[in-house]
Image (spheres, rainbow, N blue to C red):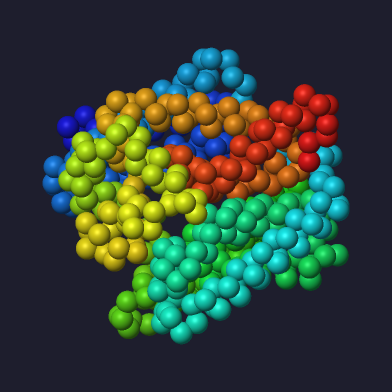
Length: 422
């Protein structure tokens, strides 16, 4: 099984890369989702070569089938005659958002983040003793409901979209005080939440927007490289500080170089190793839940958890995995695409659903390319980061999917009514 899985993985990666290189028009959402599958497969094979357990081997097998299915979905898109999407800021800049609406969105996001920061400190003051406790309390609702789903949409999705839009299509020199005020308010709200990924996406999206704008303005490559290096250093320092605040840095004392190496090691481990490793260790529980649940039941329960109507007595799938692995019930252990689909739809789902996901993401990019307004162009930058996690309805809706659906519906009705799409 290991040899067959390895061959399937290598062949799928080679075929997909060949199909993309032969007609390359920039990065698309399908590329990011495929990268997510490939990263998971890399982690799965690494874990298996380290443990040589049956569970890790089966997780690697599932990841190879996922890659095969996703590649087949992309092949269907190409032979089906779907056009290759192409995006440019030139066409987007002709369709800027209304200034009054832009001001409303700006102040709504700023005030929302400030209120969130105030409520967190007001409700949790004296009740938590570390940022990790604060993060768990916000997620679990132990000391009050903080509407984490709504906060996620505004703070982690809408705010980076608006900041990327400002960076791309506004004169930052004229509005830099206003821009950086909003940036640091959003950053503070993310730091209070105690999650590192939104911080990385915030800096990554703003940096990507600045890079695109600088290239379009013809700035020297040396200056672009210098500023991007400074931004990367700032992100590195922030991640290191967050690791200290959350207690991930450990107690080792090896100097600044050792600390920096641990930051890179932690980032690599979180992106590549953690999910396949935890999924392999918890695979008996995944099999048990699959056998004792209805088809798609875990995905539906996860969607319900985004609403205020969730049952606080029942543990989510991520919480159950965390408890099985020996963590706190308030902790969360993530499933990767192969194991998430397998837990809900068995092996048949692993064969079919990745191909459906690929076709869906391809069609979303095609729709975005048809309109390609300024706000859609900015939103797509953020979606490129979050598409790494778009393999279940829960993660799709949580990480920007609501905005994808709203954009598609708004575009459809605007076309029907011959109304200008923002």
